Length: 247
Image (spheres, rainbow, N blue to C red):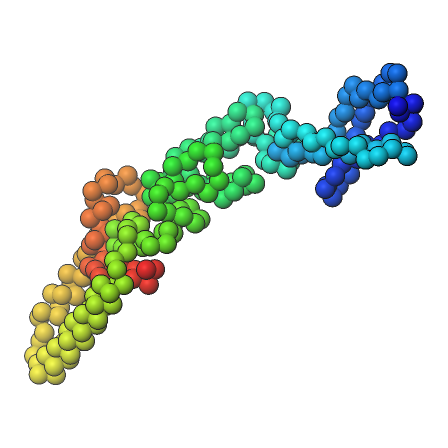
């Protein structure tokens, strides 16, 4: 029997102490809490500790996760008190925010969206930092372990280590032989006009110009963008760039 003794109510494991409003009715030695209200944070659950002087410990009561009552065109960030306006390139239901495909959100605490490039690596949704399979990191620009990006700028499965070592060794030998050949040829033909070098220079310059076209503000076809990636690799002598370091 409580017999109208003062009943204490506190919150466990919270740094701040929000105001708690309680309506208590005593009936036949029993304390009936008709209403308990407090200014709570969205997404949190609270543990209420009840105490009565000279009485054993009373079992705590744990609340459900606090739900939002915001308007449908808004959302609420976990841990906050206020409603936020829905972001562009997203839809909101008053509590959650769903990101449109092609856009990325760093975490559930972020109120900023970033456009992905390419857009296909960011499927959108309501999960934080969500990327398509084999992609990860900010704007889904990194590859999962065991995958790397090549000149096609896609995360692809790495070759076995032995293949990587053999390929890099062969590449080094070829580059060394090529440079040696150019040096010998230049020395032997120093007194001649090297028309081949001039043509090669014009050829590389021409393809480098084409490779920068995708950076212009123009809706280029997908096949053209894919082609320019290969051209860029050849023009910048990155045709063998398969990012072996990531593997």
